[in-house]
Length: 155
Image (cartoon, rainbow, N blue to C red):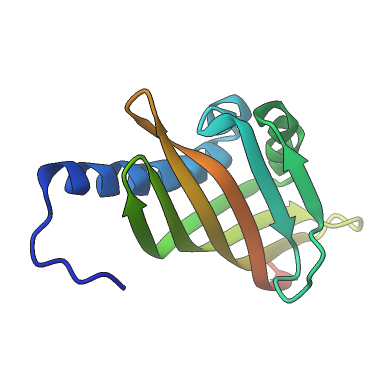
C-alpha cells in the first residue's frame, strides 16, 4: 500500500480516473454494453481469463480490442448480472499504472430444467493501465476467478 501524505492534483485526478475506468467496466457489463466496454481498452490490449485463479493456464487469452466483443456479449446468456466493485490498489508511474481490484459478481440464469439459479463469483482483476490522449485505458486485464457458488434463486 502507498502512504499518501499529500497528493498532487494530477495524481488525485489520475487515481479517480482509474477508479472510474474500473467502475465503467462493471457498469457496461451490467448494462450489456459490449461496445462501450470494448472502448475502455487500448487497441492492442491483452485480456486473460483464469476461471480458476490457482491454475497456471488461462481459460482464455485474447489479444486486441476487437477480440473482446464475443466475451462481453456472452453476458447476454444471463438474465441479469450485478458486479460490486470492492477494494483496489493502484501504483502510478507517469502515464502508466498497475492495479488490483476486487469484485463480487452475481449472475442470474435459468438452468436446463428452467430453474432460476444464482452464480456468485469472487473476482480479482490484475490490471495494467495506460494514459492515451489524456484518457486512462486498460492495456492488460487479467480476470482471476477465486471462487464461485451456484444456488437456487427466487424470482
